Length: 250
Image 1: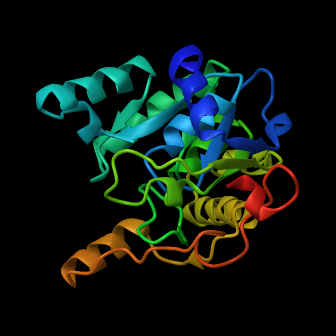
Image 2: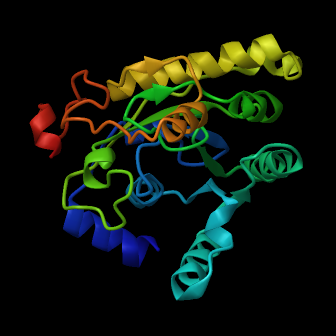
């Protein structure tokens, strides 16, 4: 995929990356990213040297028709781990699969928000990422996707030719809490620290509510996600792209 789709993405969309040196050349690590568009899961792996596997909603594996089969085949081919986002045993099984990948010394990607942001802002993280970090002992590397919400707004299947950026921060070490993986207060504190690090990289405004709850609220009112203007999702300045300015990342 890196040699085919990855090469095409780099040529056509000219994505940029900053902070790639924070990803270790070997060993386990958790990549914790904001989630603005479906294409986030394409651009981040394409710009890294090491393979990285993400969790993905189980609907990607159960689609019907030719398109559904193509999507399911692609997701299985790149190693996406299906997860039932309704909770319960499905989530637990997915996290255990991710833990096994970390124990094997590989990279594991996760979107702590649990779903795409409905309006470009950064929402409250779910504590599954903290459990993974504490149980595995792996460092958490915060990641900010920039501009993907402009290239592919919600509802748009084929992204426009807008430059997408990736900003990778310094690893976060939570080994001091490893014996406290069952303490819900510690899990929340660790998750909040991760989300704060992502916010600092992305320039997003933070909302202390779950993205899924906000989507449900919008749906109950018949509302649509509020489009965000070019720049930092949520209104703050976007991180600098190559060349030293936000506009250079476009």
